[in-house]
Image 1 (cartoon, rainbow, N blue to C red):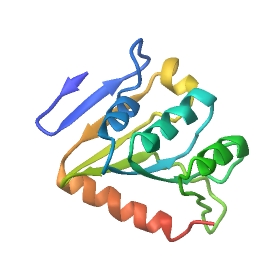
Image 2: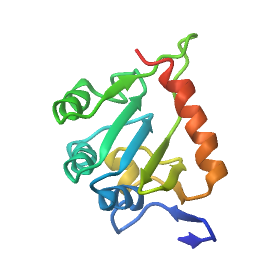
Image 3: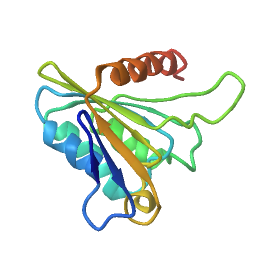
Image 4: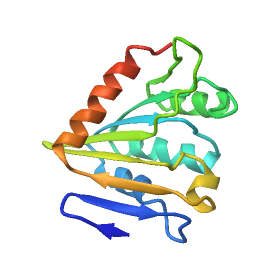
Length: 154
């Protein structure tokens, strides 16, 4: 891990648990978590996201439309847990390859971004990079991207 003034950078593969998931699970009641995901696969990963909602966070997901990247079973488990879930389709059929999270709680804001996906392979095997930042300019830039993507939701 590399720690900066307002941004921490993590590298994978990791022996320890996923830093972004652990950070988000700790936010709990009163938090708002908006996830933009290219991949969401695997029961433990889905369970982790559902755990964020069960801990009291308001969770929302925008996901890639490809069913092999985000299987229907994952979508169903998330929506059954009360998590709003929308698939994003590009007007020209291009993949939605964005990977970031916006988290807010009690006036604090964080953006989490990097190469990692919400999959077991990405959690434990892939060489990945991820950042957790409370930089306001970064948060605002990613929040604008959320709005662009949300306008495209199916």
